[in-house]
Length: 463
Image (cartoon, rainbow, N blue to C red):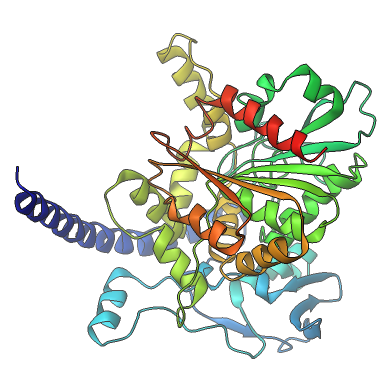
């Protein structure tokens, strides 16, 4: 087949993908409206209260009820409700509530507009759903803003998904010469989106050498809302909340003084935030498939990342899955009910189907979360980090001296290799290693022995 024929075939494939995607996502937009009504009724029947969602574009003016106060601290707006709950507005991504439909985007394109939502106004308006969640969290407003039950009716009620200790993350600890005593340096492993500590404990950690274990403690956390960590129904799962929980559960609790960070995908954003907060303590940064998308001039960062990560296309399948997860609050909740609420049944079925010959740690991570956790983490961390990662990388470049190593799979269809090259463009000393034939998951799973050996070399360079 000649080059012209291949080009024509590729163009026809793209056109077909766009046409089918338009029809599919218009139907999903309609289904989302229907599911909004269904869940409003279901929540009222099951929990005795109307629960807010982000379908509405309504906002509540700060101070309108006397319950909300907005103040300026360090150049950022802080919302306080009855002086007991504080929320930094820049922690909240507008993609939570500004997700135009396919037809709205098409109309905006036809009229010459970009279809992106405007930047958050400089005023003090706060989306009504966020205000209602905060009111429920601190119990104001009488019966009108009843606190969220945790777990909710649509969440799993098993012991693993609902730990007794709700104030700290689940942390898997190995090494350090026994007794849990503090060591000269430690290693913190952070998993990615809809995953768990098992992503590391079942792959890389078993292959870390006894020599490396004797000198370092190895910490692998389940992030807030995932795995065996707490999943508060009233949390907004912001970058600040995730980082503070890691601090409380690992750094402060275990007396960590100096540490290396190994992070996958979404965890890379948390790793950078920790590095900026503890510049003197971080010995090395290893980022695996970091979701870094430099925002073009004139674009609204959050909306640009949303459209890039979730392009509303049916092909490839991973793009379709990301689009459903990002654009459809109620449809993704339905998926969560089917998979996560009944994860024990799915895990049992998988074990029986494979005759108990395949380990299910990836399923454990994928299924053990709540919709509120995944929805807010996806928007407030991945989409909401637009612009924040730039600042973090600048601090790493200018103020930190630690080694920075970036791994990326050459066949990663979720996050392109350009993300890692963009990190190097921002931090010239970063070493980028592209592994051919590996994707977003197999960059770790399947090459864990090699990765463990390479990580030890990175750690030893900073001794």
